[in-house]
Length: 138
Image (cartoon, rainbow, N blue to C red; front, side):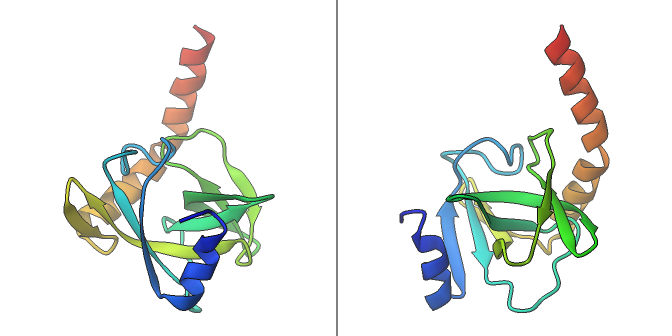
């Protein structure tokens, strides 16, 4: 599927299962091993900790986590990233992750351990960012 067809595909289908690429969502999703499952938002309010597929201008698609909501705009960051993206709006967001497939086993974002991971990972992100910056100066 080419990048342009994400939006087109989701216009005609409620759900998309796609192989993860990149390292920005480690350790949750590993390139070459895992798939993510996204669905149209369908007027559901997005919340902190939701993982969303959004369009970054000019033409790239990104799967990252909402870490904060400020004045109706989202602050988003990958689980393996240290830089936050600000000013993401509902118009930028194409779909929300509802599950993932790891090592052939399907998981839902409504599972207790996934929710625990999301909260803990976001709570520890300032420490992760600090350690990354210290390590990069050594």
